[in-house]
Amino acid sequence: MTPASFVESKLGGATILNSRADNLISAVRECVKEKPDAAPGIVTAVLKSGRADADAIAPRVTAAAIQGLGAHPSPGQVGAIVAASVKATPAVVLETVRLAVKAAPDCADAIVRAAARSIPNPNEKIETVTEVTSGTRGFSKDESKGVEDTQYLPILEAIAQAALQGDPSLSYPELLAAADPGGSPPGAPFTSTSTYPGYFYPPILTPPTTLPSPAVVSK
Image (cartoon, rainbow, N blue to C red; front, top):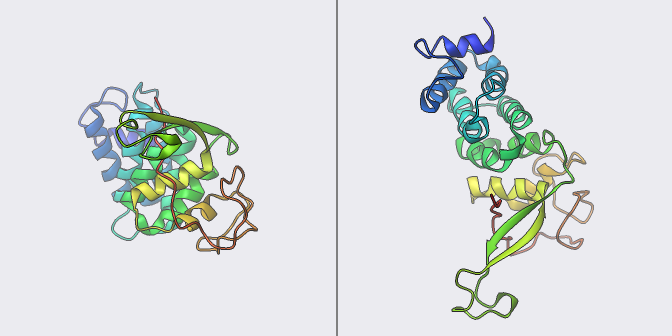
C-alpha cells in the first residue's frame, strides 16, 4: 500500500484531492500513529498530491504528523517530517516551523536544522513587515500607531525566530546555531565563530540581551 492509498483508506471513500482539510489532517495523524516510520512519505504524498490548498494546510499537516508520533518523539523522526514538509511546500516554511515547535518543543533544534537544510535557497532574504514602536525612527507613541517598517531578513534567521514564536522559552542563540548550515550541533555556544550567513549582529562572545521582534512575512 502506498502512502497515498494508506491515507485515503482513512477518508471514508474520499480522496486526498477532494477530502475536507480537517478530515485529511486527522487521517494523517491516524496513519502516523499506526506507521510512524512512514510519516515522511505520508506528509510528502499529501502535500504533493496536487491540492490547491497544499501551502495552506502544510503547517497543520506537519503538526498532525508529529502528534501522531506520540508524547515523546525522537528528534530524528520529527526532523524527517519537517524536512519532507518544507521540501514539498517551502513557501510556508516559517509557519511550518512555528507549528512544529508547538507540537514538539523538545525537538526544536532538529526542527530548525531540518527546515534550514530543506529550503531551496538558504541565502535568500525575505520581506518582513513589523510595526514601528514608540521612539523608533523618531516617531512618538502617537505618531507610530499603524506605521509599518519593511526590511529584508535572512531566511535562516527568520526560521530561528519562527521557532521562538512556537515556544518563547527556547534559547534564541541556540536556535540560530541550529540554523547554521555550517553544522553547529544543537546547544553549541553562540560565539564569534558562527558561520551563519546574513548574520545581523557583529561578532560577539555573548548573545544579545534583546531579541529582535518575530518577523511576519508579508503576503
